[in-house]
Structures are given as C-alpha cells and as structure tokens.
Image (cartoon, rainbow, N blue to C red; front, side, top):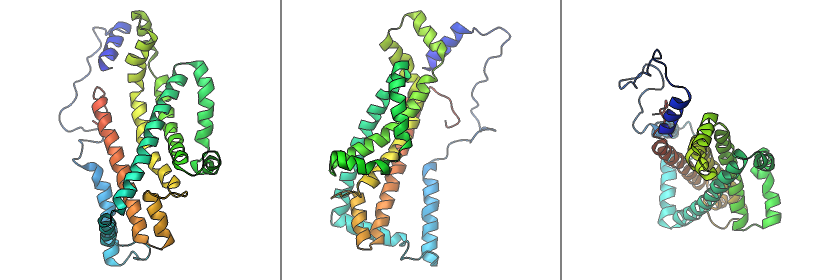
Length: 286
C-alpha cells in the first residue's frame, strides 16, 4: 500500500524542483507526540489499579464484604482451578466468544464491502445496520429467546449481531475514505473489479477494520456476560450467577477479573497484529 501510495502521488502530482523533500524520520527522542514506547506499558494502568486495590484492602478502606481483598480472590481462584470448575467454564466461554467473534467479523466485513463498493448495496444494508446499532443488545434478548429458544444458538446470535456492528461501521467508513485517485489509477491501469478490491479497497480499509476489531473483541465479552446469565448451564457468567445466588462475592470478583484479563489481552493481540500488518504506516503510535 505504501508503494502504491508513492506511485500514485508521483503520477498524479509530480514534485516540483522547488518543493522540499520530506524530512527523514527522526531517530532520536521526539519533541512532539507521545514519545518512545514504554516496555510493557499496557500493564502499567492495570498494575496501578491492582496496587490501589491491595492498599485499600490492607488499610481497611475497602470493606471485604463489598470487595474482597486480592489475596482472598487469588485463593478462591486457586480453589476453583483445583476442582476444575474454572477451566471447564472458561473453555465454554472462550468457545462462545470466539465463534461469535469470527461470525460477526466475517458478516461485518462482507456487509461493509457490499455497502462500501455499491450505492445499491449501501441503500439496502446501511439502514438495517444503523437500526440494529441503535437498539441495545439487552432489548433484543427477549425477542431472540422467543425466536431461537434459550440454547446455544440464541447466545451465538446475540454475540454475532453485537460484534458485526463495529466491524461494519469502521470498515465501511474507511472504504468510503479511500482516496479517489487510487480509483482513477486502477481504471488507468485496467484493474478488474476483484483486482481493485484486493489491491486497493481492502488495504485501504485495513486501518478501519482493525479499529473495529478492537471494539468487537471488547463487545464480544460484554455480550457474553449478558447471554451467559440467561439460563446458561456453563461458562464464567453461569459461575458468577451461581455465586450471586449463594452470596459468594469472591467468586463473582474472580469472574470479573477473568473477563477483564481476556479483554485486555484480546485488545493487545489485535494491536500487535495491527502494527505488523500495517507496518507501512508511520503513526504516532510507532
């Protein structure tokens, strides 16, 4: 994409002799921008939260009946791991989230391509997606239960429909934001429709896709929390629902910590992949 960008600019607007070359990227410390990356910087904020939790619990500022101490939660997690409940329920939750995420991403990208590359497609697709965007997932669950029952199918449909929205919105926006000069170049060199999609449209929409994917990963866990408390018989949400029934606050906090860690590391995985795939871009985050 970077090579194509430079090639397009040379063809469309050749640099004049008086126009200065762009300054090479500074290798030292930047005076502007966020500065150099911090090693393991993603863990700094969560570490501060845990530190505040430890200090609050040790000093008595946090009531253990309201929020158990970190060492209590860790001991409870150890017990759940020892009897196998945590692993089995976590595996079920991961399976639901991954299947719903994959389906939502695939459908969201397909809809974005249809709406982003065709005016007719946009007229047919964009309206229903915007309607779904405006309706909270919680409001749809009663209707989905009537339509699909209370089994796994309903849970996967809720996650999938929640995930496809950010994927569609961001991918579609970046598709429509592709520079029109790329389209002119594609027509000049005689690219086919598929060639245009593969070499220009898809690469141009990748930044939006990854932005949507980061949101989708988080939303998949949010939707999972909701559906696993609707007549579920397994999963982290089911474990938390049982704990609520028996007043086991420490088990509830274990579930919340797991959801938080899955969201954090899921976002980190997407950001790492984005940096590798979009290595041709020079941004403030590099």
